Image 1 (cartoon, rainbow, N blue to C red):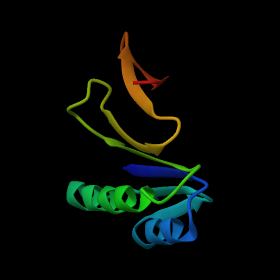
Image 2 (cartoon, rainbow, N blue to C red):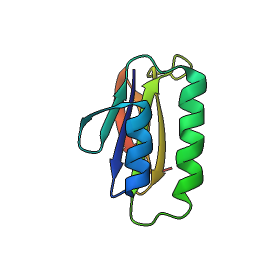
Image 3 (cartoon, rainbow, N blue to C red):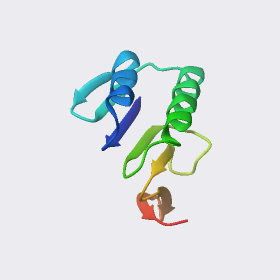
Amino acid sequence: MIVVVTRNVPDKVRGFLASCMLEVTPAVYASPSMTKGVRERTWAVLSKWFVDIEDASVVMIYKDNTESTGVGVLSLGEPPRRIIDVDGIALSYLGK
């Protein structure tokens, strides 16, 4: 399962995400079966477009067995967040 949450992004970003994922509620997109390759290409497009975007953010959450929490997180914009493992509990951490 891949989930993307956006904040204050232009219509072209929303349209792009809606073309490859289901918009389950405004600014929240989900795909239960997106492959790793498609996920990486989708993120590459978002990253390229984000260079010209101000005061916005995009967060992608996906299953990642290489992380101790089992969750991978990619983010663009502010504030950046990381998922950390604290005594077996996944927590969202603001900072580097």
